[in-house]
Image 1 (cartoon, one colour):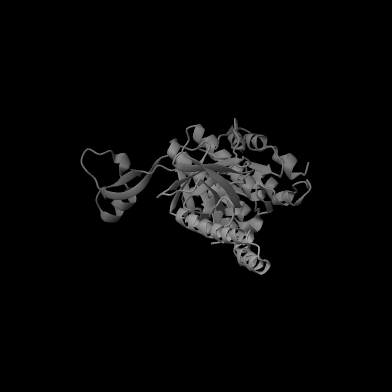
Image 2 (cartoon, rainbow, N blue to C red; image 1 turned 120 degrees about the vertical axis):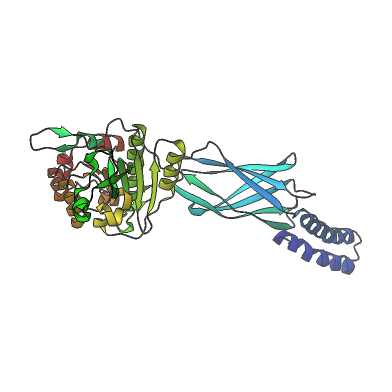
Length: 407
């Protein structure tokens, strides 16, 4: 189609022709005809160039982290001749908005790039893309739709943790400390009849008494995740905007703890507590860790689930059955505190990472939460995070007494 400049040229051509006829100026006739021909040739040329184009994107490096500038390389591959010598690619990239980049002919392909500056964590889908082709004089323009498949993942920026606030363990009555670890074991799968030669230690006496003959336990080794890191995605507790929001701090904390446990050779489960339950086990393989990192990159605040369900078998599924449970949340509801206390008193290992969301509303108000001291009194390790805190120091060693007292 003709641009505004092209339409102006087309409108000017007959005007010049009439002026030339009225004034009897033969010099203006070629100008009028030339303007009309230029617009027609430009339209025809652009029409021939508007053939299908295939778009390829590439980013520098395999992983992009929040706060980085991301360079996106573009390559347009013409599927037929003639092909344009230049074009402008327009990309709509999720929350990053619309970006434009010029591509120039290099051999048989057109190449260019654009930069997305200081991207927050998230998944940026390519929602719409097209190429704009113009003639050298800007008289005609054609828009060629491009396939906009794919997305760009920006991972959270995690920190290295040499020590963990959970490693001090819970206080025992005699003043000693114990690490929050328990060994895995066997679960009762079913019972069956006793076979000669089997150990009498496996006899299931209740079933034996009920059936009147020896019955033995059929045990099944149920490998449970040693550590489960549960990330609360309650939207009602989020304060601030990405990347400086309470939820982004939650994600960084959960990811840092997950990586710290995984690098120590422990079996770890990442659980996302939201409207839909997403879980990823990390058993030490790079593929497992990459999938967990992708989950952390794309997670967003979601509809609230009851706070107490974060530590219950019904609400937290596999996470609540883990040998050690670490909950990362910005909510400190009484029912959650009660549930954590029940788990601790029943012998279950549990820890809490509490993100103080009000600190993201401005200022450095002290954290005055009596519930935190109550959890500590029950032997539950707690890390408190505020806006601007050193994540490495807070998760490695935390003084709950100082934080809870508002120091």
